[in-house]
Image 1 (cartoon, rainbow, N blue to C red):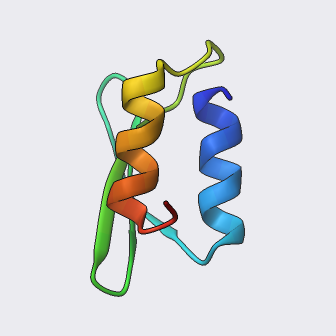
Image 2: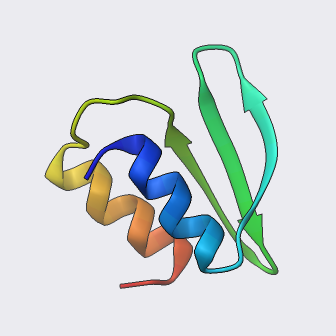
Length: 59
């Protein structure tokens, strides 16, 4: 899954974009959950993918 696909998945789960930092990293939040997703078209590494899902409470 790419960073762009992850951002779409999180938006469907109710997350909103709080800000976009330099380097195209999206800061996203939903209630008490918060995560940062790189806006890249490359595949996310397994560790980063799992960490984002864990931060988002989707895993």
